[in-house]
Length: 191
Image: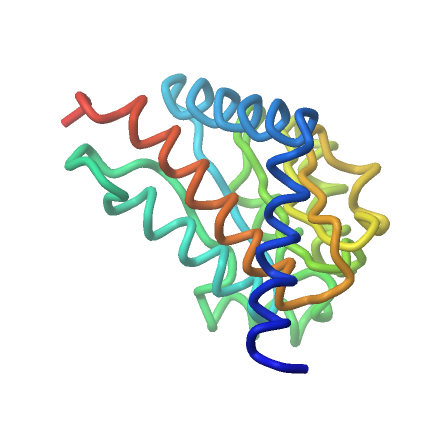
């Protein structure tokens, strides 16, 4: 595939998203839910595998630090970062439980769990969504392809209409930045 063709496909994927008013409405609703939860003293837990793990960490960094405005740090945790927790849970329970055990221990009713998956079929995220739903967390999926098994488990879902993992991930980072912008604007006067 040529570089130009690949870039054009990435652009076309994003055009499909912004041409879909349902997608834009859902994105705004997710931003409002996150802002409301944060203003009510709740936290956001984020997880993903591989490149989506990096996206989870990126999302958490923008909210705990700053995106555009200097503001107070916000309570957000990427569940992908503590190698001792991940390896202990992986060893003792299996890799399928590395996120659900953390959601079980850290998540409270009204908190938000964000699962990021290009396929929507990551077993460890499905397990985490199950626990999050049982414990009264608001569940959000950043998904790709057809949304996979995760789409039916999420209170809110944004499905990137592409079969290309790289283009899904590129759209996910755009979505993350848009959510950060909404949240950042809502908290810009909080210091």
